[in-house]
Length: 83
Image (tube, rainbow, N blue to C red; front, side, top):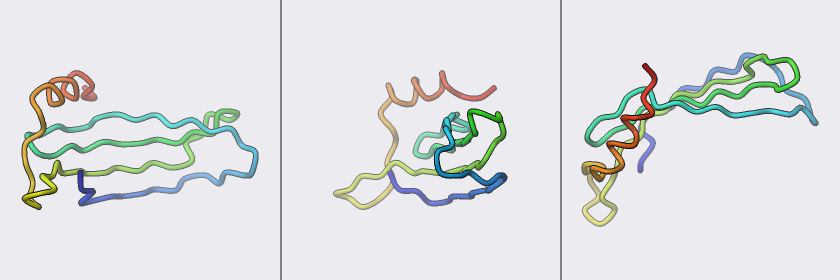
């Protein structure tokens, strides 16, 4: 995988000792690319502290170019798509 695009939005400050959770969701799945989002929440307040959206491309590290995801991975990711 190669991360080709990443956007981070910081919304709330977190302090040392805060308990946080990360929730992830697949937004889009293509033959060679996947877009997903991670959301960080303060568990005590429920407030979203940060959101990051990433675009990754599946890579053949020997050929050094993009290549399709394995079919079983595409099927699994499709089942996780945010609808």
